[in-house]
Amino acid sequence: MPPLALVVPIALPIAASLIAAASGRFGWHLGRVPAAAGSLAALIALLSIWIPIRSTLDIPIGALGFGANLDLRLDAVGLAFGLLILGPASVLLWLQPRTWRESTVASLGVAAAVLLIESRGALLTALAGSTAATLALIQLEMEDVEAPRPAWAVVLAPWLAMAWVGVILLVQGGTADYDSVPVAALTTPVLLLVAMAAVMASGLYPWRSWAARLWARPSLRATGIMIATVQPLGVYLLVRAYEMGDGRYPNSTLNVALVAWGVLVALGAAVRAQAATTRREYMSEVLPGLAGFALMSVAVGSALGVVAAVILLTAAAVTTTCLPLLPQKRGAASFFVVAAAAGVPPSLAFGGRLLGLDAAFEVGGAIGLIGVAGVATWLVSVAAAARSIGLPHGPGHPPAEVVPRVAAGLGAISIAAGPGLAVGALLAGYVAADVIALPGGESLGGGLSVSTVSTVVAAVALLGPLLVLGIVALALSRPSAPGAAAGEGRAPLFVVPGTDLLRAGLASLRAAAVPDQYRSLFNPQALERIAAGGTPLLWLAALVALAFAVTR
Image (cartoon, rainbow, N blue to C red):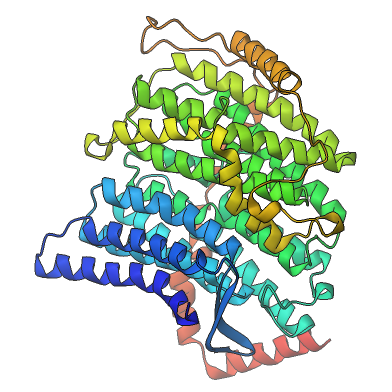
């Protein structure tokens, strides 16, 4: 396979965007075909490049300047995350109606996301990530300016942090390439920057983040594409950090902190889900819960944890594809999607959570104790899923965007995928082998099996306690009868003390405003006019004062 082939998965969505733009300008009426075909072709190209060789492929393109290189690389990690991005994007671009302008921007965003996962170094990752985030925000504004969306600073800040990481690695280690960074260059402060970038890039917060608020938009075209192309990138950064650290993080305390943070993210989503007043509000908390468990799994620091994280991200990708296509009413589609996301055995979410918790228990110590909190979080999420059966469906999105049969089919596949989990672990095993070495030099069996400490687990011992927990969760959830009124309000299972006071404080903070007589001090246009009209002597004096302050 020629190395130049790595450019093809990036070039195909760009070509699709050009075709979509030309079709709009010249009135060819190609509709959604170019964007969907470009994403699907990029997915096929990734598989065609990696499967014949099943090893890493590099291509040096040129220099970006100041020691940074424009180098591409495709390994198992890039392939896995490329499929997680291109799969949902291809389905959504094909099934959802879009204008040619929306299709053009969406295709460019997909190309930027593929460039990120093929980037060999941190600096190109930062450049591609900021491009993908910018294009995703442009899609949101093109669709509906007044609808909820994240602030520009929140979405772009993580990629500025990754650029900072790249500069530090260049200065301290001489390179920012993931596979060439000296282990000593990945210090604790550098990894803290990577972790902060990962948390912000994916919206992994215990409170309600932008990743959950986007599902409240009237239309979910741009929401689905942004979640599909942007949210998995945070976990991707943490996986690459293992590669830079030769299979581990520089400080085990960071593993414990990230595992605890992941459980808090999942717990926060579960608590909000069990208090949801509509089914759409519940659905908006499903993906943060899965992402929190994925963060917990990848931070455990073992190959099994990475495998679990990939499986959980696969379940999240299926859910991301289903939610924009789901009608906001009771039916087979809603049932299958909710069941798959909640982790009903033997779904992908069930297997991923189970393997993630198993990895935490095998590590033991503080991480094992946090795993117990993960089990309790899973119990709350199951109770919230059972409670959602009786919720009113809430506001819907345009009927033209709803494809319930596809959503039901994907949900059913996600539920039925449990027996084939060993086959799904094939690629996940290659991903883990690329970033984490197993103890004693053991292999992952060519990706066909996963080595764990507990090699034999009786079915009764495994499924019995989980069945009991499921029955308890179902009893606590108090699902309403099928004949309950559609608009009937339902009380949450429990209320966290102090939330009303915190909500009131946040509302007061958001409502704060600068008095009219002082607003000119914070007017960027006025400051720009003052700066443009200043005399050279004034700016020369300011420059001298700044130089004096810096050199003191």
